Length: 464
Image 1 (cartoon, rainbow, N blue to C red):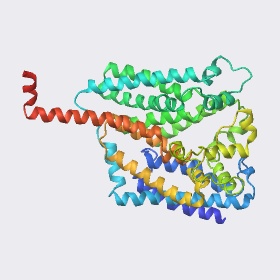
Image 2 (cartoon, rainbow, N blue to C red; image 1 turned 30 degrees about the vertical axis):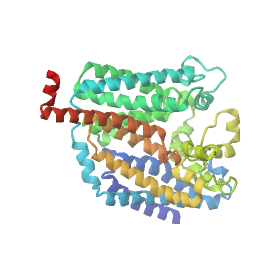
Image 3 (tube, one colour; image 1 turned 135 degrees about the vertical axis):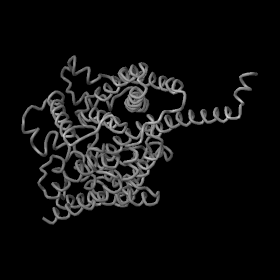
Image 4 (cartoon, helix red, strand yellow; image 1 turned 60 degrees about the vertical axis):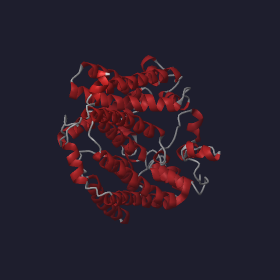
């Protein structure tokens, strides 16, 4: 009963803090911070942590805990800390920046989409080059993947299970992983969102055609390895774009309808891809889709807390981004992979085990102990809120809207994927520099030409 009371108190406090720092927790007006709250914390972490500390989870991962009574409590305390400390860090940076969440978020929603420069042709040609690169990257991904799982599903996969093919597509990719991840997996969906906004507001055939090509490519890269979640997150990004440009208004009924359709599609994927047919797996709270939502992302946090410092040594920075570990000639490792290898070695051996991704504090703890949890939570809270503030204050053009949506969906996913990606993520950095650079270049060029035109210099140049 004590844990239930604590859980309810933390829920009330955390919800109040997140409502303030986000400007809105309404499900019909989603934003970066509210998605972090609902998806990363409430659904993926907080609900499961209560069932685990009460000992009524009966989940296969937590059965691997040694001294379970102690570490169930420790894990619950850590999750409660994150639920409160993360929005407190956001509140602090909001006060420092003079940010008024409710006012600025609603103003952003109502603002019209602005064009990028006076010359739409120039941006289109830049965009066309990037689109060609992304399509070539998709073809490269197909070429360098030993056996593309989606093709194997359609034409037959012999004795190899689809689960093994999924892991092989990721772990045994024969090409440049960074090139694939940036230009095929990340760039294509983002380009499709930008092209869609231009197609809507210009109504030009060239943008419509380019959007259809990029949309097909984005759907493919989100389903080619038979992972279930990426295609859902891509469709959510698409929905958010329509909301932010004023083409869709959500209601409770629409949210419910989308949820039902998504649930049916998810069940279908479990049946087709994983061969699950019994009703118990779909209805049980600790198996199938429900168990994956409320336990699969948080149970590994308890395992991290249990194993590192006990059965496994602390990493002391070895899982930091490779660009940092290489400077000190240290082999890069991921704690999620180490936990998988320690707890489920048979899955590593048979090729069906990858990593046990979980709440970011787990990897922070694996590296630096409880100090890592405290510092990591404050750091990520500040980073997320700064990003939220920046996008709400940037010009609302197709590129920045699409980048805003991209981060609004990918940051909540990364929060339950690890900690080091928040220290240095080459994909995020490149996308920001690439698109920010193009927009800045076009803006500066336009300002320079305007400066010359006002002074009559353009006429003199043309005469000469």
